[in-house]
Image 1 (cartoon, helix red, strand yellow):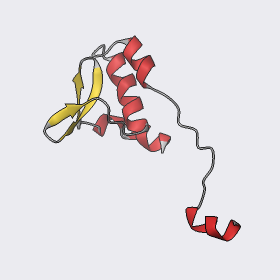
Image 2: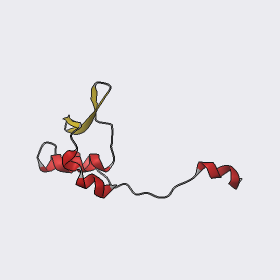
Image 3: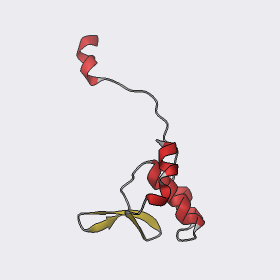
Image 4: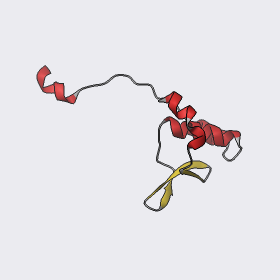
Length: 80
């Protein structure tokens, strides 16, 4: 997922910068609380490099998602 997001970052155009943050259109308004995984992360890096958002906003709004495991709720009844 991360590698795919890096490769497609230049194609990512469905966002706007609002109040120094990456925002996505939802119900006719730009929302900065929507997060599209690594695509949003790398968009922050791209726009910080282009000086359209601050380094502080980039640092506050990016992260690395670490998968810790999966749990099958379908198998839960079998365990009890």
